[in-house]
Length: 161
Image 1 (cartoon, helix red, strand yellow):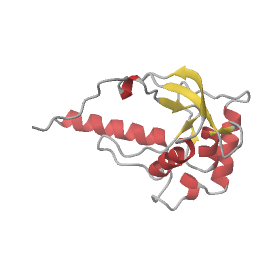
Image 2 (tube, one colour; image 1 turned 60 degrees about the horizontal axis):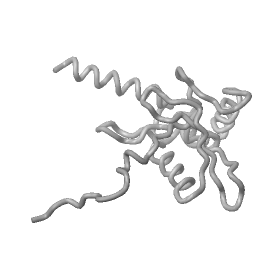
Image 3 (cartoon, one colour; image 1 turned 30 degrees about the vertical axis):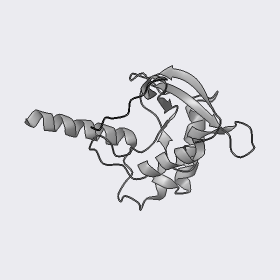
Image 4 (cartoon, helix red, strand yellow; image 1 turned 135 degrees about the horizontal axis):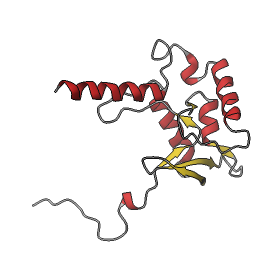
């Protein structure tokens, strides 16, 4: 008789894991819950994994969002350099995120959203990542627009049943 393995010691993963939402940015969505991925969603996820897995990071909590996630800035170490690289800035610079402009936006910077807007504008002018134009076809659909469209679609499906 086969039985699944059960943990006999230590906390459950969900009890020892913190969900973090990066402050100031919004990345393209990955496929989940039957919804398709946005262009560059998987690339953004891989980018984060490549930069953070196995490295020292510093998470600076700014607030909590409506889902209980930590809204934070994340600094990480590149090579032998000190903890100075900001993950949100790097994602914006490489065109794998846009500035988060929804309600409750948090910016861990003295000059606030202006700094993030400059980084985004530079990536856009250089045609990096989501600003490249060709991949995915057509105009850029912001992650906030995508989520709103998916909510509207789900509401329409529920309304038809």
